[in-house]
Amino acid sequence: AQTVTQSQPEMSVQEAETVTLSCTYDTSESNYYLFWYKQPPSRQMILVIRQEAYKQQNATENRFSVNFQKAAKSFSLKISDSQLGDTAMYFCAFMKSPAGGTSYGKLTFGQGTILTVHP
Amino acid sequence: GAGVSQTPSNKVTEKGKYVELRCDPISGHTALYWYRQSLGQGPEFLIYFQGTGAADDSGLPNDRFFAVRPEGSVSTLKIQRTERGDSAVYLCASSRDTNEQFFGPGTRLTVL
Image 1: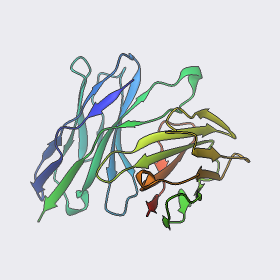
Image 2: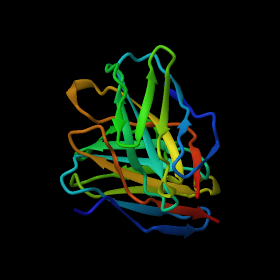
Image 3: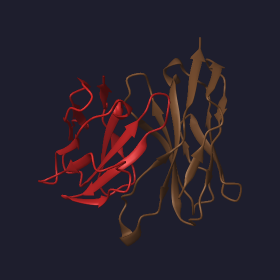
Image 4: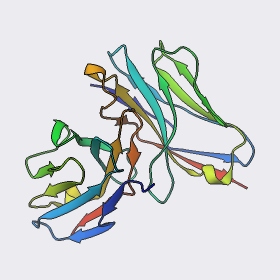
């Protein structure tokens, strides 16, 4: 079984500054995917960024980037130039690489980190 | 195009009653997932479908929970003899040919 741990229940940052959210995971799998999802107060979960475990290069999506350390089983999210709209709950999630060449599989989520961006 | 929709958005019921929660996935999405999110926690997997069949139902907590997807599109999560501990937000997600899951807004279930 996989576990995902987010050790920061809450974080805050000033607008335009940079913040890093931590995530560690435990698995015996060698092939898997890691995700960061954002859940604003509206409850709609939105994918922020994803990383394939076989890729050494860290994923980047505009102001969002990850620091993926496979040996340490660590997957942190860095948000640069924070904006008020980034205020949300952030979840780290794990998916085992599906068998049979499909792309489908269940997500295992961490407990979440509430991020507040202050003006 | 339209996203994943879930109805009702809120459901209040009494202990012991039966409830049905509905999910309309994005058109053409072959995979559909159900998760349960308790207050202040991350979502927990319940079940997922590929087409009409349940590919993995390992997350269903007990036999009071059942889900169907008879025509490979809309899915219904059914909870019998509800208990106060079933109170949570029930999230549905769908996907097609990708590991990105698109989530609906959820149904908040309150069992009194």
